[in-house]
Amino acid sequence: MKSLLRLQQRFICTRTSLSNNWGSFDSNVTKLCFNKLSTKKEIETAYEEYKDGKFDQIPDPKQLDHFKNKPSSVAGKPPPGTHTLPHPIWTKEQLVNVKITSKQPEGKVDKMAYYSVQGIRKGFDICSGFVFGERNEKKWLNRICFLETVAGVPGMVAAMARHMKSIRRLQRDYGWIHTLLEEAENERMHLLTALELKQPSLFFKLAVIGSQGVFVTLFTGAYIVSPKFCHRFVGYLEEEAVKTYTKCLEDIEHGPMQHWKKRPATDLAIRYWSLPKDATMKDVILAIRADEAHHRVVNHTLASMKPDDFNPYDPGK
Ligand SMILES: [Fe+2]
Ligand SMILES: [Fe+2]
Image (tube, rainbow, N blue to C red; front, top):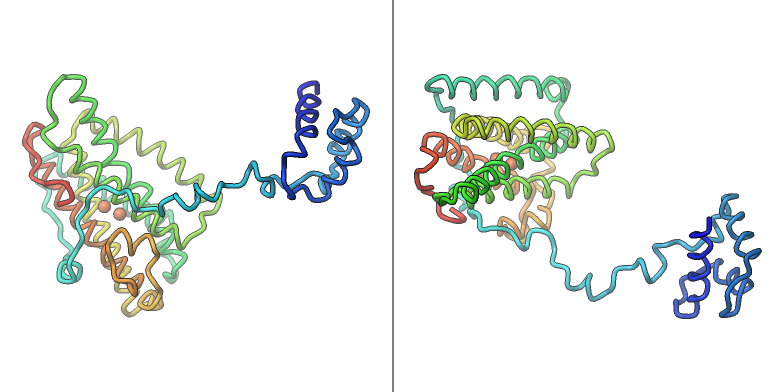
């Protein structure tokens, strides 16, 4: 209570330096004091009114200059996606020539990775209700947003694990870290692009928090034990991602998502993939699918290499 009174005293006596945004509270404060400290009784009365819920006498914080963004910081703030790492920009031929592929598992590690991904995919399809009923935009956005929150994890965890190993063992990294970070950021851009079309519900946010907690923990443990398993796992995961986005493109072409042939691409997508100004959401999904096909080949390649082999992928390639 004492600290509240002290706060209110300071608040009231600096009123002359604030501008016109006080609303009805201004006249109330004017009655209370003229550039002088309020009496203890006046403050206690105001406090009682506040406790009684007379909020119309309290200014909206958003209207106070103190809480407003300064114009210079808004003007100087770059839009999302302008400070990203280098990444491939796909040609038209590359976009349309993406094929669904499946690498035959060789050996125990590959089989473990393959069947883990198949199990997770089938479980997720059923639990998320994606396989039941008609597909529509809401279902697609839910699926894309949720899966991309998961897809952004492996690259970051793997990059961190290799970074820590390098500084712990006082050894070089052989050039893997930048590729893994690029992948993590690329997945995050997929998520941010889809989020421009979706307002996540509280349930959705809780599901993301829960799944991130579980997946980050498991993937970190798995990467410490077997990086090969993890990269193979991501390779198979990306095979599924290519299938998913191919199905989305089929729905855009002939199914319930045909309005995405005309729906304008989001600003972030146009900037990030250097798309033409009149690009549509179909172009965005084509670009995302090409990214997933790239992650597919990168992770299968990394899984087939020894941890101290040199990364064959240059930055942004
Ligand atoms: Fe993705
Ligand atoms: Fe991916």
